[in-house]
Image 1 (cartoon, one colour):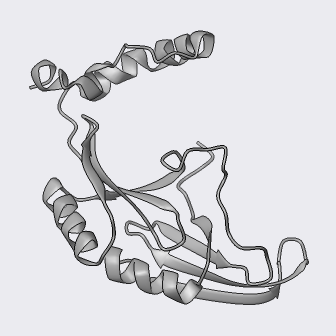
Image 2 (cartoon, helix red, strand yellow; image 1 turned 90 degrees about the horizontal axis):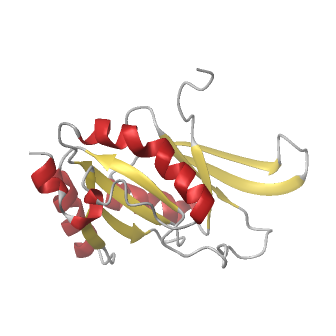
Length: 181
């Protein structure tokens, strides 16, 4: 396989200092690197920026660019706000519920937990408007194998009909509780 892992994921932010402090306060993600330049290294374009890197655990890095000379941030208005998001894994359901409590105590509006059968998750927005998800795995024996059998048939059916195939409806209708004990 060519790719070994994601080196980092970069988003734009409104304020690099505010962003670094928010991620440290609410998600315990430490600032590991700050880079500032007056020109873009890859293109040579004159454009001052601050680029910050946060430790997302297990060798994963979340990065942000503050771009003070560009028009204000916005999002893709043709894509629903719930679609584009970054999902971060937590250790357990207890950790997920504690994170929800901490976020809410800090004034962050949280949706969930939402049961996705394989995992449960909560959703919220960072101060830049990026949607985040914290997910705790709850997969049961047999679930992954069942999904592996239908992944291509589901995708092929979707490609033809653009209607949700029902091969794995058990994931959200609750029947997985009986199917996979």
